[in-house]
Image 1 (cartoon, one colour):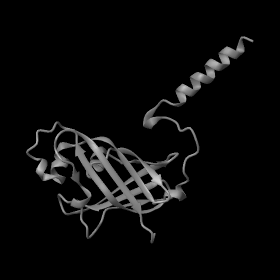
Image 2: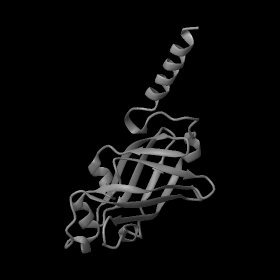
Image 3: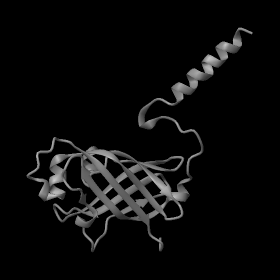
Image 4: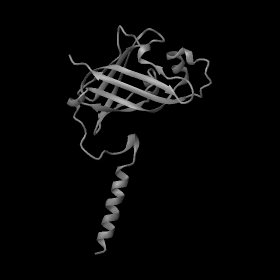
Amino acid sequence: MRWRPLGLVLVGAAAVAGGCGEGGGSQLGPTLEPETVTGVYDITRLTFDPDGSVAGADIAARLDAAEPPRLFVALDLTFQLAYVDPATNKFVDVDGTYETLIDGIRLSFPSREAAQAILLPQQIDLTFDEASGTLSFDGGVDADLSRLVELVPEYAEEQFPDPVRGALEVEFTRRADE
């Protein structure tokens, strides 16, 4: 009977160890299939609200409406984010990888700078809503002050720390014709 308590301890230790590690740990159930989330998505909401008394900014409204930002999610677990940079007026495309989660996907950008171009963290978990065809995130992030001021010039006079902590809301909506 001595093996039982030891067995329970080992099972408990394995469960704790399985929940630790980079990127939020292991998952407790099956993940989405890549086929479920593949497609072309438009950015339909992108806002940043700095912690404090300053009003938030609609970043999506500052991006080129003639060439709306797009997120291409491929079957091979890669993605591409393509947009016209409002600060330089140049076309930008960033390639990265993703993994499926229980309720969405985790985008991994190749660098912090590439993600910060539109104020995203280098890794971001997006929740997938199949009914609306959206991938979304709503939570606290750190934004590089210089990039934030490029996107929202009216923040130039503010005394923000670098990085600027704030609430980010982003929503990508899958195109019906894709």
